[in-house]
Every structure is written in C-alpha cells, then in structure tokens.
Amino acid sequence: MSKEKEANKNISRDMLESYRRVLYQVKDYFDSVDLNNHQLDIDTKMKLTKSILDAGGLLGKNFETLSILENKVEKEQVEEVKRRGGSKTSKFEQ
Image (cartoon, rainbow, N blue to C red; front, top):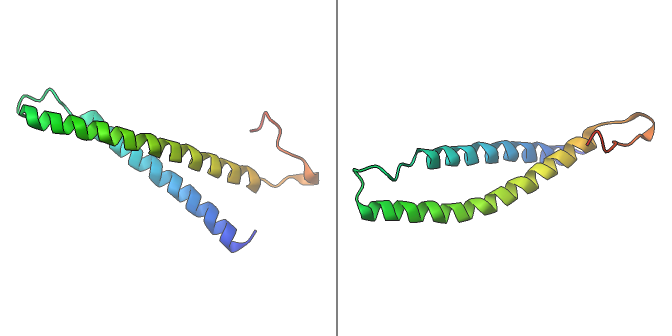
C-alpha cells in the first residue's frame, strides 16, 4: 500500500475520533443548559433558546458527515484485512 493511501486512512480515523469527541462535548454542553434558571431574564433565555435551535440544525449536517466518515473508515478497515487464497468477507463478518 502506498504511503499516501496509508496516510489518508490514518487521517480518516483521526478525523472520526475528533468528530465524535467534539459532538459529545456539544451534547454535554446542551445537557448542561438550564432554561429554568431564575437568574436569567427572558431576553437571555430567548436568545439562548434560539442559539440552541440554530445549532441543532447545524448538528444535523454534522451527524450526516459523521455517518459518512464512519462508513469510509469501516470500508478502509475491511480492505486492510488480508485473506489467504483470495477469500472474501462474508456477510456475517461485515
């Protein structure tokens, strides 16, 4: 396998790990937001709610990208498996 192809596989895996880590951090942040906090005025609560909803729309696109990246890494991992005698991966193994 060429060095360039191997580097691309490593980048894909690293990107997948980074993507997952960041999305979990965003999830933790959203989980920590408390709109029932009585110290916040109504304008702040509305701005915060709008920001969360706007971010949710962007997150949907990121989840699609995450899915594509996961599929790419999975295919690369399957390709890495070397088989004797030219055997192929069965559906059970996928």
